[in-house]
Length: 69
Image (cartoon, rainbow, N blue to C red):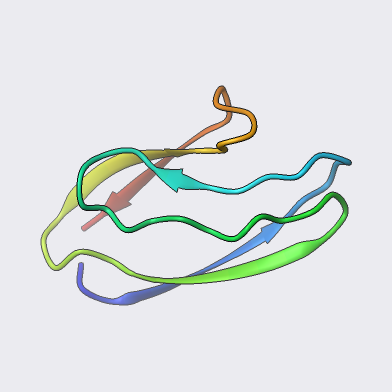
């Protein structure tokens, strides 16, 4: 909790992807990563523990569970 986290995202297909945090006040939105590309996103976690999901706004069935301890 309260630390910076660097996400390195490798897109292994032809579609554009990103991650958007689900929940109020999360401020979790990665840049779009084009097909076949790798991108990075630096995020400062909330100062208190939280568990939330993030999804790809282009493919909302792609979910990621994020646990801040």
